[in-house]
Image (spheres, rainbow, N blue to C red):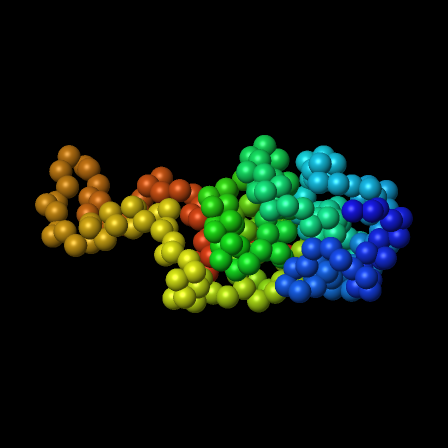
Length: 248
């Protein structure tokens, strides 16, 4: 790709012959108002000029939070600027999967997940992102009014269930059940399946004899403190609720 000082030229479809995503220039997947804020920002002009897939990775590992448009000045975050640069570069799918597989840099993984949601086909979105629902690491999130605490699995769950994330309107993702009915996806097995089966088995057992020697009875199927994970997987369509403020 030829690098131009004025990134807005990359948004001109006249004569565009690069990779198409859903029939259009990938850089146009973000709304015009957001694109304009990005290309006019200091971070974009100073840190994103001339980046390729390798040097963008170097920038991404230095990102310290996720987010879209932030602050009273409505400035784009470095995370959003790099996501836009990825759309311009349209790297090979193998490169994006390498970003995702890197467990050392969680913000690089979050950036790749965001790109996957914007550009991959529906079945591939689920197949690629659902394994990340087992990543419970904390991430910092930039909102319009400040910072909040989030988690990788919560961020991925929002990508799978919400229509707008990081100041970007996401294309409508078909429901997982719909894709299963079309035989495009296999039924997802919950990581908590074994625990749920044990609870069902406990419920089906007859009442146990009264506890002796002060032992607490645990035959009613209730989970005591410490019996399960502190935070279960968010899961696509799991009904998990994000308490973070809107990030644009």
